[in-house]
Amino acid sequence: QNRVIFFGLNAGDADLANDNVEGANPLADVRVRKAMSMAINRDAIQQVVMRGQSDPAGMIAPPFVNGWDADMDASSVTDVEGAKALMAEAGYADGFAIQLDC
Image 1 (cartoon, rainbow, N blue to C red):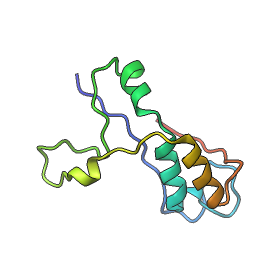
Image 2: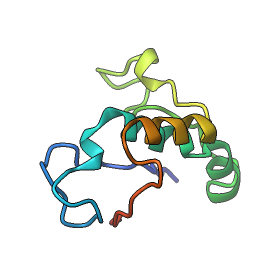
Image 3: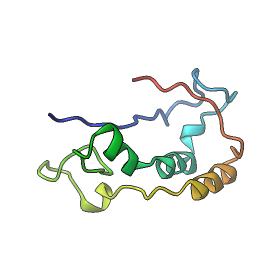
Image 4: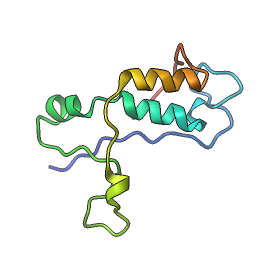
């Protein structure tokens, strides 16, 4: 069985309809996207959700697909304090609410 868990983030729109930030798109800021990645505990997902049957990756393509790159495939290390600092630097020290659809 093959499964992929990933976030597709709308970083292109000037404003999002499904967040509580008025007049801006917090996902357009690379610091917010990096903070979100740093806050994800991939080891917990690997062990609990995927029952140990997964390999955390930084990109959706596997190594045998053209375009795969080892540097891009490296996943972020979980660093909640670092993520909080990046969010504060981006102007979202208290966070924001956003609807994630799957």
